[in-house]
Amino acid sequence: MALASAVHPFPPSPIKSLRQQPHLILSSTPLKLPTRRAPTSILAFHKPTHPKPQPLHPLRPPPRLIRHRISAKSADPDNQNASSGLQNVVGVLHLVVSLGLVLAADKFLKSAFVAASIKFPSALFGMFCVFSVLMALDVVAPPAAAGLMGFFEPATLFIQRWLPLFYVPSLVVLPLAVKDIPAASGLKICFILVVGWLASLSVAGFTAITVHKIIKTEMVDAEPMKKPSPFSAVEFWIWTAVFISSFVVAYLYPTALGTSARTCLPFLLAATVLGYMVGSGLPSDVKKVFHPIICCFLSADVAAFAFGYFSQSGLDAVLGDYLTKTSTNPGAGDVLMGFLGSVIISFAFSMFKQRKLVKRHAAEIFTSVVIAAVFSLYSTAIMGRVIGLEPSLTISILPRCITVALALSIVSFFEGTNSSLTAAVVVLTGLVGANFVQAVLDKFRLTDPIARGIATASSAHGLGTAALSAKEPEALPFCAIAYALTGIFGSLICSVPAVRRSLLLIVG
Image (cartoon, rainbow, N blue to C red; front, side, top):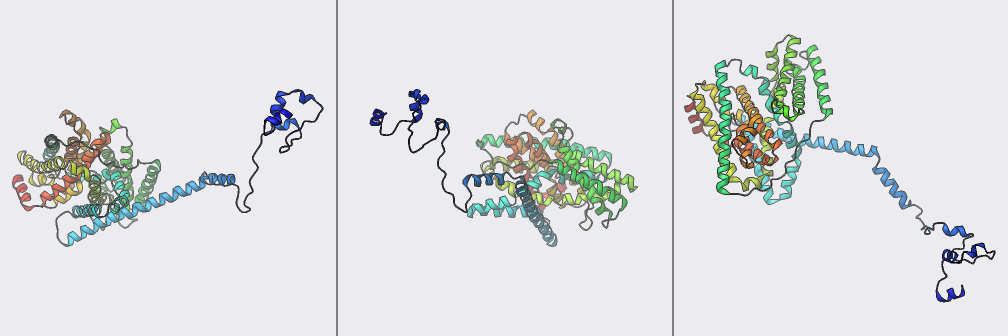
């Protein structure tokens, strides 16, 4: 031990000494241990040692306790539920404010244009104003433009989510719209609808592919477009409860809300919404034949028929209450169609989002859209004249490839038209395109996403756009742009008196 102490500056480990000299364990001589540890027995060497705890602040809890409290607080389900509930409330308020501003702007512009006797579509003017403001802000203060886009994003997603529903009222009241139309005229309208859609798709698609080959612009990635959330089971059961309760109230008290139209509004609106939810949840193979729009308007018609049967008022009376076309006594259809102006204004946000894509492919987009819009209007007039369709009916279906909101504005330029027929033909054109557009595009060997998107939107507007973009996301930006621009150019063309006179001259 003395030799070891002389060699090493510190005494050797006691455990090491015991291992090297096991006879010390059996010796009766007490073992000398380092004074700095001073254990009372040999077994103490096998106990784990811990650092000396540091003195704690008298008012501060230990760090481990703080971490435990923080983790316990973050894992508290009550706090999480409260935070989630607050976010939901804020989200609903954000949606109400942003959508309310869009609807208020549409209503204000409509009233102002009516008071000033301006026939130009007020919603289209609003769209131009919003787009101009966004472009100006993007040049002067880009963060302000981005903030404005973010503020109105809930409104645009709401419109995108429920867009097909705004087209339904014209199909629900279709039995009233075609009531006075002869069967022969109905067959001629169907012929123009199908053949005209096929011709418009071909013209738009081949024009886009030809210009694209001449320009030889390379494809670039478009800005990602956020998709709306799917429908939940809670929404379905809430609307089911609204339908049942309001149906019973309307049956027991037919004028509980003042008029029959207002009393029937809740259950007819709920029936329309439920039909759309059920149709949207169908398998993809079923949707190819049974589009959600079909399920939607059938659900509303079945509800109207049931109420007319039990109340003995008849189907026609209930359908008349569904779409009254009066602001003082609105029905369920009037509420839904009241969003059509906001749909047009929302085009400004979608076009601004894809402004870089529009600039890069401006030649293909604008050339195809302008030619397709002009061709659609004049080919309809020519076909109506050739097959002998009544002039008033031909004028009513002129804007067959333009979205409902602007199609109704276009026919308002003419006299003696049937606006209900206009809306119904527009929606039916969209249904034809939604069901057959992919097969026809493949048959024509139009494989370019630019051509496929422009051809679809220029011939089948919103319904065709939704059907194609669900399966071909790369074509969605071109669909959205062409969908908006086709209606815009169609309205601008028909706002020119010389164009209207030429169409009337062709129709006869």
